[in-house]
Image 1 (tube, helix red, strand yellow):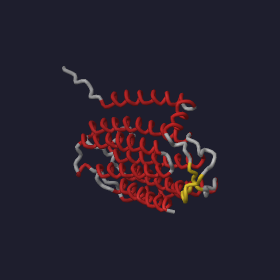
Image 2 (tube, chains in turn cyan, yellow):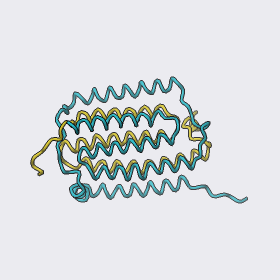
Image 3 (spheres, chains in turn cyan, red):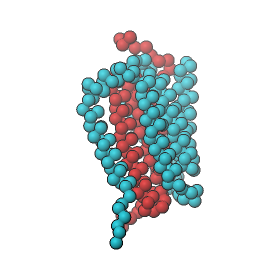
Image 4 (cartoon, helix red, strand yellow):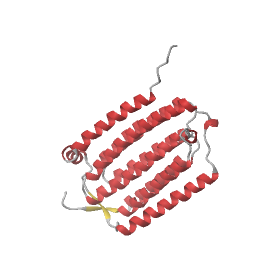
Length: 168
Length: 109
């Protein structure tokens, strides 16, 4: 019963901070609310016995990717007057579209399965079991993802590089 | 310990299904509403993370770790997407001195 209560409170906090990401005007506030959202999602991972993934989520997402966003945002040095505001009818139609997406996803997938069973307590989320699965069954995708990383890194350097100044 | 499946009291896959769908929709609404490119990228990260939440819930429900491996790959794709997206954003800022997505309309006929 207490776990259920913790899960519901965490879920409410997650939805609230995710809403604040979208609603807050200043981009730095959005980044900080997104970091808080990732911490709450890591709390959900801990509740479902996926400890290693919770730590990875905090270190990689909140620690690396979000700090990258924050650095970029502070390097750009934007003013309040640069903040683009969207038109009213655009946001209204976006809210209608997103709400219908939510309704359709829930209505379409609810009939397909019945998910009323409880989540089991299992030990597949521990480091030992996860590493065994990753380095035996999923070894080839793991190696291919390193190629993806290298190509993304080269692409980022190539894109963000300042072009050579021509002397004429 | 692996044979007997003790249920965690009160947690259902249903709850996590609805929670991750709501988070995904919030991300989609933010992607459509906001005009700031960096906030749009952050909304994509939010949508990816809601999918991660559902994958972990299914992994706990079925008792295998395979879905959590897919969460790793999603994190890899998210990191690659964030680096390339941010470098494109820096290029757009150099050209326009602004990061509004509506300014990138050079291809419009």
